[in-house]
Length: 260
Ligand code: NAD
Image (cartoon, rainbow, N blue to C red; front, side):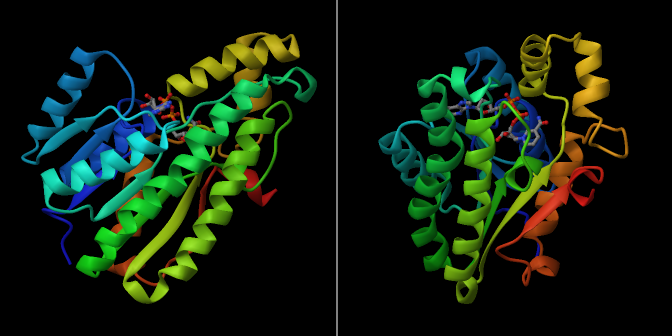
C-alpha cells in the first residue's frame, strides 16, 4: 500500500531529526503536521519547503509538557487533515549533570517531553487509527533506551520508559492493524547534540573535540554520526506493508554501540 496521501503528525519536527523525518515523509507524498518550538519565520519556511514537495503541511505549536495542548493538537490535526495515520513521537530535550546536581525541574521536563507526551499523543490518536483500521506509531527513542551513560539520569530513564511503552502499545494494538515501534539512534549531529557536546565538556572537564572523539563516537563503532535522512528512511520502512509484523520492538541504528 502506498503511503501517498496519508497524514503524519511528528512531534518536535521544527528541528533536527523530526524535521528530517518530515522532509523524508513529504518526499513520499505524506501530508505533515509539524510541531515544536522555534522562530516563526523559520517554521513557516520549513512548512513551505515541505509543501513544495506537493503535500499539505500544517503547524501546531503545542507544548509537549502540557497534556491539554497535546490532546487538542491531535484532535485539531485529525479534523483539519481528515485523519492521523502515522504518529511519530520525537520531541525531546537533554540535560547532562551528575545525579546529585541534577535539577529536579529538568528531570520533570525531560520525563514530560519524552515519555508522558508519548503516552498522551498515543492515547488520543489511537481511536482515530482504530476507526480507520490502520495506523503506525513510531517512537524516536535512542540508544539510551537500551543502555545507559553517566550524567543522563533523566534522559536515560525517560527513553527506557519509551521502550517499555512501545512494547505495551505494540501488544495492545496487535490485532488492530496498528504497529508501534521505537527507533534507537546513536549520535546524530543535530542542535540537541551540539548543546550536549558543550555540556559534556564542562561536566567532564575536557575539550569539545575530546567529547566528540572520546565520548560520543567512542561507542559508535562505525565512527560515523547517524544522519537524519537515515532515520527518516527507517521510519518510512516501519510504515510500509513489509513491516506489518514488526511491532512492540526497538530498532538500533547506533553503529554497533549496543552490540558491544
Ligand atoms: P533537536 O533539539 O534538534 O530537536 C528537538 C525538537 O523537540 C525541536 O523541534 C524542539 O522544538 C522540540 N521540543 C523540545 N521541547 C518541546 C516541547 N516542550 N514541546 C514541543 N516540542 C518540543 O534535537 P534532535 O537531536 O533532533 O532530537 C529529536 C529526538 O531524537 C529527541 O527525542 C532525542 O532524544 C532523539 N535522539 C537524538 C539523538 C541525537 O544524537 N541527536 C540520538 C538519539 C535520539
